Image (cartoon, rainbow, N blue to C red; front, side, top):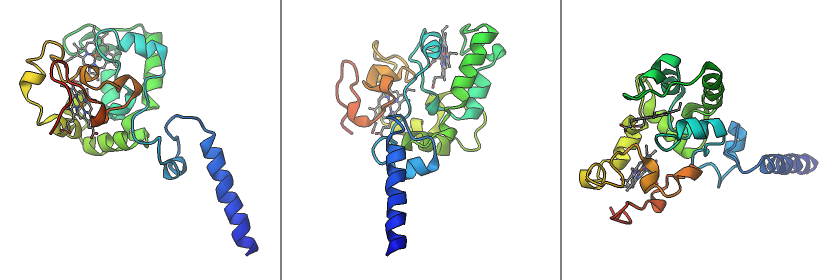
Length: 188
Ligand code: HEC
Ligand code: HEC
């Protein structure tokens, strides 16, 4: 009985410790195991330089949407000089800041449900440079007709996540919060 009591106290204290860790996604496996509500979606962008530099031409993608191998190929001086046909080069100090911000928060280092699915679907595919090429992401958008994407002036590209995902800035990609411009709610 005594043993039972002290182990309950131990578990309860752990719950408190993890509960006070803040509203972010849990950092540890233990945190993930006992976190039921916050672990679903990816962490929103929290670095101002990243938001400004990588949000200049498109939605600033949260690092949890791609695995580290992908980010390491995207975030080099050379790769950014020819970034999908655009020049997105950065000075080396800025590049280093962004690399360390991103590399610590990649899909394969994250425990959120969404990031785990992306990491799992990207396994063994070291040449993935696009979130829109991750098999899980492709599959999720497979049924949306082209006229609602490329044929829609307010969307144009699937890579413009935030034109349809109204909570993308919060890292939330749940299908409940999708609103396709000039179309509305997506009913499968
Ligand atoms: C000068 C404009 C510009 C800047 C600045 C820029 N990008 Fe891009 N980015 C593009 C274009 C254009 C595409 C391709 C869009 C398409 O064809 O879907 C793209 C695509 C991407 C994709 C792939 C999207 C997909 O299809 O899943 C990622 C990831 C990405 N950018 C990350 C970044 C990061 C990280 C930064 C900051 C270091 C950055 N971008 C800065 C123009 C830019
Ligand atoms: C044309 C509008 C549109 C764009 C642009 C778009 N999505 Fe989606 N997305 C949808 C719709 C609609 C669904 C629901 C599809 C279904 O369930 O059949 C969806 C589903 C998803 C899901 C699964 C959600 C769930 O609850 O299972 C994820 C994750 C997702 N999108 C991420 C992204 C990301 C990341 C981007 C940008 C790289 C993006 N989407 C761009 C419309 C869009």
